[in-house]
Amino acid sequence: MKIGFFGDGPWSHKSLEILLFDQKYSVEFICVRFNNPDNFLLNKCRELGIDLLIEENINEISFQKKLKKYNCDLFVSMSFDQIFKKETFDIPKKGTINCHAGKLPLYRGRNILNWALINGESEFGITVHFIDEGIDTGDIIEQETFKITLKDNYKTLLEKAYINCPKLLIKAIDSIYNGNYIRISQPLGPEQGIYCCRRILGDEVLNWNQSSLNIFNFIRALTYPGPAARTKIEGDEIKILKSDLINNSPNYIGIPGTLLFKDKKGFLVKTQDSFIRITKWEAPKKLRVGMRFS
Image 1 (cartoon, one colour):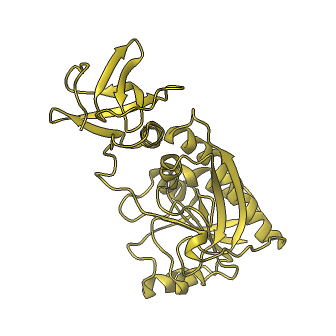
Image 2 (cartoon, rainbow, N blue to C red):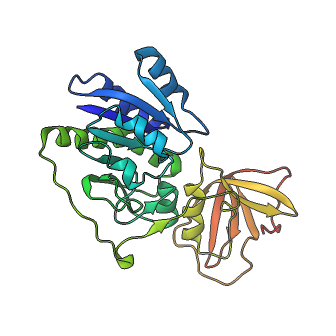
């Protein structure tokens, strides 16, 4: 089966390696992101003599004509950053599929792992689906869910996704090759799915006037390789890298953001409902009890 591969980053590397060494499949080209091409994928093209495509707009008519010449059976998208229009995703005989690190129909859109943590979810999903004219609305081929515990953060969810996205994508490709896949249509009503926007600079600012649980979830959602949750104290920016929930902490009214107490583990900071312990941070000055985050 002839495959056209659109990809970027660690998400795509393992999937591509499996495809390249499976004799059932022939990768006809690799299309990388235009603004930040993936060096691993660039080197794979050079090493194996695979056509490398870099295109600012994959939906340009001239580029569509180029894609048609490959006569692919299937296009595969893994962490690619452009939206496929119908004239593009309909080019291959068997359609175009995408691997999405979200439990569709919930969590369509961008930065899904961050949003799942921010929302305090107990699980996240990986979904392989056909691409259609919507955003992450195409028929589902494969889906699997994974638990989120209080010990998880953005880094640990990424590690789980890096391991399991390729497995699920290859499973879906194999089922398409064998002709035994089942297409599950997604409900499209607004009450049956949510869209998550791309997180941008400024979205990492902490709001201390929230519950301890919400703040804990926000901090762990932005840990490395994310930008880290940020706050200010006396005009200086502080990165909050890790926090702990305090079991059975009292619920009381106070000034959110106030540094209440310091012990060997860190500082207790007042939240909307109680307090939370910050255990790891980066600050240009020494923090003291009585200071206030803003």
